[in-house]
Amino acid sequence: MTRLADLHGALNLAQGFADFPAPASVKAAAVQAIKDDYNQYAVTWGSPRLRAAISEKADWFNGIKADPDKNVTVTCGSTEAMMASVMALADPGDEVIMFEPAYENYTPSAILAGATPRPVTLGPGFALDEEALKEALNERTKLVIVNTPHNPSGKVFGRDELRVIADLCEDFGAIAITDEIYEHILYDGREHVSLATLGSMAESTVTISGVSKTYTATGWRVGYTIADQTLTNAIRKVHDYMTLCAPAPLQEASVSALKLPKAFYEDLAASYQKKRDFMTKGLRDLGFEFFFPEGSYYILADFSSLSRLEDTKFASSMTVDCGVAVVPGSSFFADPRKGHKLVRFSYSKKDSTLSSAMGKMRAYFRA
Image 1: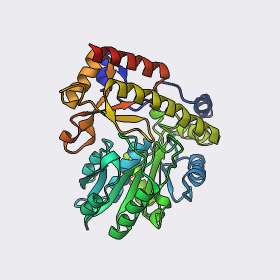
Image 2: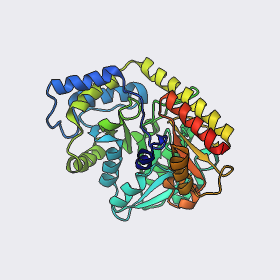
Image 3: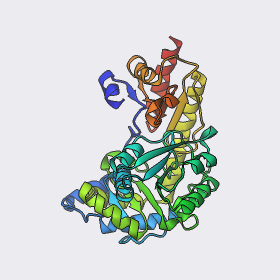
Image 4: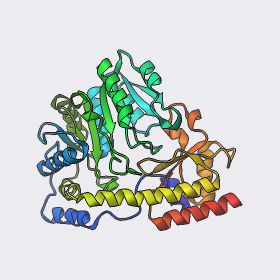
């Protein structure tokens, strides 16, 4: 959709990257790192300074105790962190559970590992369907992928839901992989809970995050995993042969990002909450129906009352004719029919971009 948006000059509310700048101090740190000659290969599993900063941040924010040398691996973004983790821990014949709607790279990660993706559809309001999860779990289940805050719905898994997942993982001997890349983008006073802090899950959880979303640096490709040493050793082997290392100067600059004051995170969430409120009001007025986002920066909207088109054609028309690019909902389901009346909006954009996009949509649907 980004290519189509570029081709037609549409405003890109499809891909989840910002059109506003990263923090000035973080950009300055990247420039300084290049000047200081951090321009050769970094340690394969990450700069020692960055691994120490990740460990410190995981302690104060996530409540996870992590040894920088034994438990932390720096990767080329959270996408590689997920791919390396799944390929390291799943074998042919294993099953990998993911909750639908699901971010698009989870299924390919399982397939490339030779494992079988096992989608479990979330219930009404994207609540965890405990019975559906129990039904999906079996002796072949190796991994359970959890994404909170959630892309594409904006759902935040609560402590009680995560405890259910933790208990079932323990019962079936499954490893959890948690994609927590949006962990700081929470609304209305919600709490981010890391699955690794529940019960004995620290021993069988891979926690994934990175600098992309929080620090407006999706192009830096700096992500990381935190896991028990046995899991970490396996992940590092795959990471080593997959990408060797993340960009050295940007790893050093990421130390600066992770050491920003706590006020930065409060301002970040407040800024995104204003964007969410603006977009949800505008889309509701137009006739879209959706789950009110609790975190991340996406709205997965039902357009049934606005068009009889299927999602791919509707998204194409939105991009070409309306000038606002969105993602077809079928992208997030194994069975495309489940998303055929849905599109995803990303509001990680400047206020002026969102205002312009809303104006284009008002004119388009009036016409």
